Image (cartoon, rainbow, N blue to C red; front, side, top):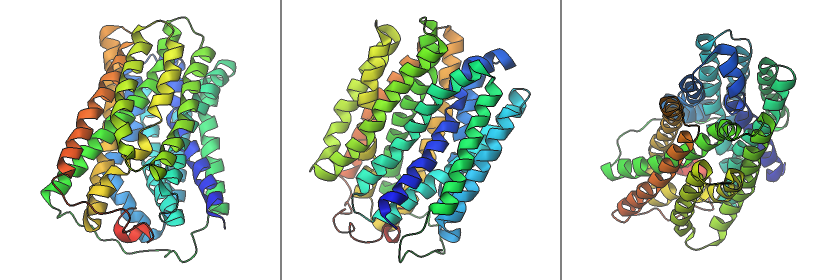
Length: 403
């Protein structure tokens, strides 16, 4: 089976994940009106989707090694279906909150398994390009949610729109179950051991890289989640706000795999991170305070798509293979923690100030804070002995703890 066909299956599955995740943001006006929620509560519903990753990131990877990527991915998609159904049939905030927790738990398993599937199929061949394409599926699903769910809810109801995410997850489950195959020669199951005894410098590298990755992604998610309501406060209709935000995400969808393509071909691609993050900080702030916010949304979509694939390669370059699996567990745990907290804080700031643009200014601060985290990582990296990527590029990644 062609590895690019498998990548298409992986892309489609991760699209369904982003589609359900963004449904709360896309349906915010309807949830606020229907359940009489505060924006802090809406932000909490968004954050609850990410919260399970704080504790499930590392165990999820070990489950994949024990039971195989396919089985764990199928289980994760089943949880995603159940979570979406609970939200669509909920009667208030308390019952609706259960859905994102279950769906988020499934999302953690799916995210980790999809990354492992990419690693198993590509094994160093166009790896960063393939990872960039996989990463682009998340904003692709988010963009679809912003462009489809709001108008669908306006024409029918928000419950019908939320149930559309259940259908998408069901289609992904069928696609993975019927089409996906492990690559030739890949072991179906591996026994996993958990090693937490690592040098202090490895912990420091994992924390600095994880903080940077969490800040970058939290900024992107806050913009995508709160930009529609901000644009509506500026006079846009729900359809126009979703279209503008979705367009910015569509642009980033192209920019993310391009960043991976650059990383596979440029000698020092990481030097692009700092200027891209600083420029993104300015454009995000301009969305909230400058004229023509739609124009700044488009500009942010271009800049926000550049660093992800490059940043994901930082930790494997600096940490020895025998410690990398544990380091990545810390990395993803911080990512999910930052994603869970940031949207609740953004919603709280919106309620506290009454300013629809305040969450976007908060997103700009998060993006700016990415830069010192990256510099901290580079400082620590200079005091360690890096693991050359070239030495492992031709070997199965799972042997080196990369999945």
